[in-house]
Length: 214
Picture 1 (cartoon, rainbow, N blue to C red):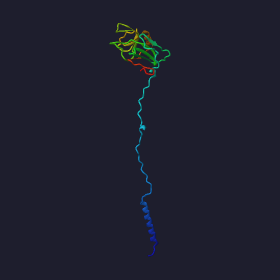
Picture 2: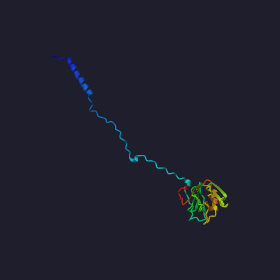
Picture 3: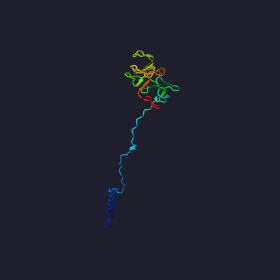
């Protein structure tokens, strides 16, 4: 058989095409495989979690914080009173009455400027407890209920007539619910107390330096 160059060329070409086809369909087994990203759930330590805010503590109004107590030695006796406003700055007035101690105190801007023993109600007409703004004032008031009795320097607290007023403060006496103070003390407190001033009448509540009056 004679060698035909044309047939040889065709054979070589066929082998090349077959090899190329094999390369095209072969997977790239040696190529590195890339893993798909996986999202893990976030983990938080207990300390990382937000904490609820603590409730805010209301700030004290410095005008009503006790800054001075008058230096009085021993219990205040009936008829005794004290007054010292020297050097005390201007400020809101607060009046307190302790029924157990039988003492009325006057504070200006947190400084105690006056204190006195008082007469209080008794029996069927006790002195009430609570917060009472001064409703009206009358320097020459007389009682419309008790025989026109004089009530000098009256500062009225309630619709039924309970007031702070001047009187003779002696042991063994009582009022019909009013807070009776010595006349000279009544004159002083009357002069500086505007209508609307709050009077705090309590039983056994005492405030100390640094505490709020209201």
